Image (cartoon, rainbow over all chains, first blue to last red; front, side, top):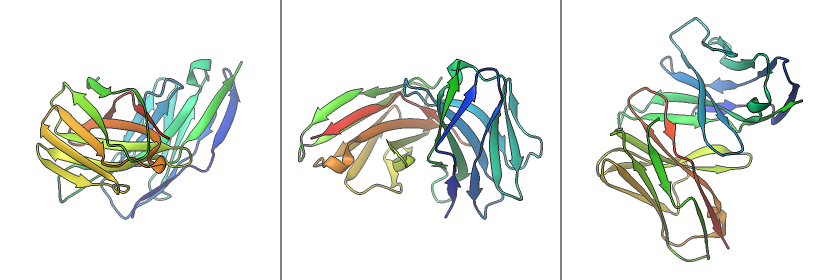
Length: 118
Length: 111
């Protein structure tokens, strides 16, 4: 069975600094997708960044980038120039197709609570 | 955005009562999902649907049932609510291998 591990329950970073959130996963699949979602206090789940396993190039979205190490099954999120609005819970998620139903299933990590300090 | 509306947003009820949560989407996404979110567990899949009248169980399905009579609506029912089902419930929709879109969640408290 697939698992997703986020080993840092809580982290803090000074405004304008850089922080890296870790995520490791376990799978025997070769075709899958990885995501980072942000959940601010408003409770919304907001997609931050997406990585396809077949792509070697690390995904980047403005101040957010990932370090995807497929062999090591690691998918860390780097936030550069941290802003107060980045304060949130961050979830790593693994997605793969479920062959029997044609749907795609997510498995989530337990989350990392990030606090950006002024 | 996928246009997902969850109702109600908050509910308090008593142990043993039936509860139904509704998820409504306007984007015609084929796949719909119900998750629960609890501290220390992230989001866990309860049930999902891959089409009208086509549903299947997730990892924490005991005590829950679902129905999908039309593409837009996915209902989650707790037949006889228990205190262990106090949680925040999220609905999500998906289209093939695209990222799932989430509703704003329903906070359910069972006393």
